Image (cartoon, rainbow, N blue to C red; front, side, top):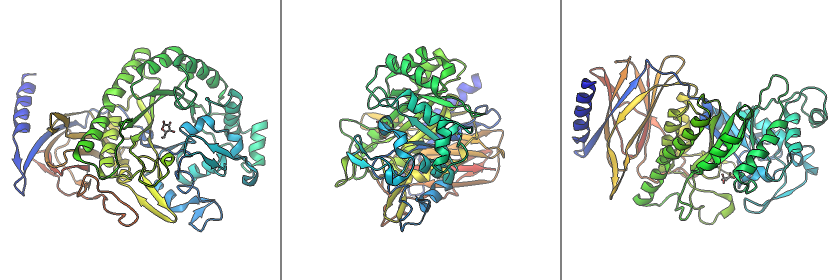
Length: 518
Ligand code: AHR
């Protein structure tokens, strides 16, 4: 114990002592310990999940171009997008909303596309939805992507019968009205969809319900979402908005846990009164966004505390199925389409959030960034036949190493990033061990100006081959667009060395470094 205190004191002195970088600027220092001998929890790959709604150009133009398009496609789905998402091994895809889910009637999206009824997408721009992308097209997309579908049912304006029939249509392999209808529509075998959301934001766009009313509705809906064959459904209750802890408490109290595998949570990194621009921002807005992002920890930890009270065995998962940055739309674009640029700042938000979700993987078993293409914190932009990968995409690429790896316990002491009278922890870290025994570290420095020297002590490992990548940028709002698609891309990082058994590196200002130690 005493040794620990002496070490801590030395560390604090070391942390507060500035070093000098090669160019003579001051460098703070941080100390990370990772125990490679003590990992017990698995970081579910589903934490790296995605969300795509019938909103703006996420589905239409993003994935779907139709059978007759000149844009290279397979069965109407863009090949470039599929290839990009396969490259980052997206583990799941949540669909069709969002708010759209609670006004979507799935039967309008099956059968001959020419005769499918049209509807108004009242939430998102009031545009006409022609239902050409429906259930079969979505499942085809998931097959092409090699990803698990997560389907969100309609509780707000639908019926128990409608949702129950959707489950039967997708999952029953025998003779039944819905299975027969599926066959008429060209699909012989059931898809066996496991993940089902029972409504979305039912406290708001999903019906403006009270928590008590929704909990009762959930019990009805969940009862009639049946298991067919060996497929055990994973049912996700529509959870709280940000810090509405009462909603989580009511659902945990009123819904029998055997009926609910997960409870969702939505948290957007935004100031709803003044969202601000996606690029061209000052340091004050940079700071504010990162502060709100780091506040996710406080918010989620409180939801977890409530869940722990009612479910100490952690049977019910926290499913963080909508998160990300939300800014003003790009000038001249439809306000209902939520189209925003994506900069190095968004990459930092993604990295910080994923580091934190890794740390809570005991309770958080799934998360979905909003939204994959052309909407909010997008990974991909498309325009005609062009495609651009955003800085956020590159984080998902670099962080793939954590999929289904074992979380390694860590302690971190580091400097603060200070702006005026406020400060944030400058360094964030996450460490895991993969099935081959390789260690992966994702390290972030949010300080816009200062490099941070890091010393990393890995218990159980004092040497090894190190490889790495770094994502950094000239400016805080550097981004990729159709003219300059590679302004922010990861490059090799060879600045990490073992010195006297410890790993040392200098983190560039506003950067993300991912290291692998063999
Ligand atoms: O992601 C955009 C919207 O944000 C979703 O439709 C809704 O669930 C949330 O309010």
